[in-house]
Image (cartoon, rainbow, N blue to C red; front, side, top):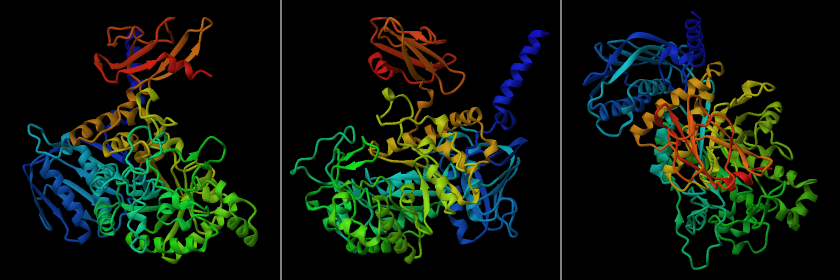
Length: 634
């Protein structure tokens, strides 16, 4: 009886830990608002008849669904405006359903019919994304897949987003990504109901958008010397090395990308990063700088040009626009005019982050400006710049947005703030009545390492999947109505190609997606990770790269009295066993299993570990030099 009671308790504990999986058995990311699992299933026929209206806004939804069902399943798909015998119906509500809003949907799957209802086309599109996640993983294949039973579990779903701003930032300035690669990035993000692509279009390494009135921004500013290795450590390029690495988007390219995104219910937020991060612009037009000799500058290729060691970053090369130069504002008026015409989204992001001010401190023009405008600090100088820029942006019918540094020295009257240095800046801006988007490094920086540094592209910080999943965009102390939503940011200093961009984005992008779409109370890390593992199958079918870093253990160590190391290993997810070796061999499950902190043998040089689930290796073989581990002990 005691054994039976113990078994029952274990089952209850397991049920509570994985409650929602036990309830529905589904793996939808982001988690819908309400899911009711029903008996039975829908079997996708070889001939699929879809009923959908003739409204123009439905065309992208119909095209998307038709392509998905005809590709991997190979179904013959027909779409009619009236089809009583249709297998799938897409219905725009004649009377708005106030519960689901503009992006919500209701999905009903029965044995003979699938019905998706929404107030607007965007809601139907998100209903289709959920439907895709209910189909077998092979639905994501770009080729015909045979011998798959294409079934959908019977279910009723009511779903709508928590936030209207659900974004990913893609830095295409540090390394250039082609138009088709940006499209691929959009295709991946819409599967998780992201609706905002923030394109970081300009920086010290390149200017990526054509401005017809300022042609040298792209003929000169879009190219540097190709370097491969650890960005930020490269030797300065020689004068005779070709500056042909990079590229830019023509205005026709931008229009094509904007339309491609809109067809997937994604808006594109353009970012022109000023007054710092502007070396590419200064190289193209040296007269924009406060500093004599700027005409000798070159677009950065990854060689050091900033000093990040102090409390305030200093520029080795002046990469800023000059706030005291009236020509700068004429320049920015031209840029903003053309950008505003290219991007229909209401906001333009003008950067404002990490602006080094050491060259401004030496500038006679800046000193004169401070006297004239009664500016006391360099932060107030930047605020003067930002407020003038805000007026330029508003004169084009757009809303001004910047990183949280724009708060320092005084915030413009209507500026929206994107908070990246934690959530403090966002709280401060919201308390002043400004709109805020949360994108804190603490949870949402996708360029950070996902595992131990011995296993990842080296950067200065780590962000594990479980930590990303803790992201909560609304602090308790602010008016929630001012928090527009949140986003994750992928900076690409160390990201040279799309495959690495995919690796850095997924699965952490899924964690952010659930944080900005799903109800706060429905979040559960054990349940979420179970869903992530099912999503991995979909990524495999789609041949999209993702990071398996969640299976890698973390390492910490202290010194024993005899100088040897006592090493602690920790797994991010439950249910894994970790096996290890110190003898330079490669462990498997027949090696010692980690159960408590282990003492490294006196003369050992290397610890190797691997994680298993049962008899199956699931993690990567991780090689940890003990000298590296010892160097981390403070």
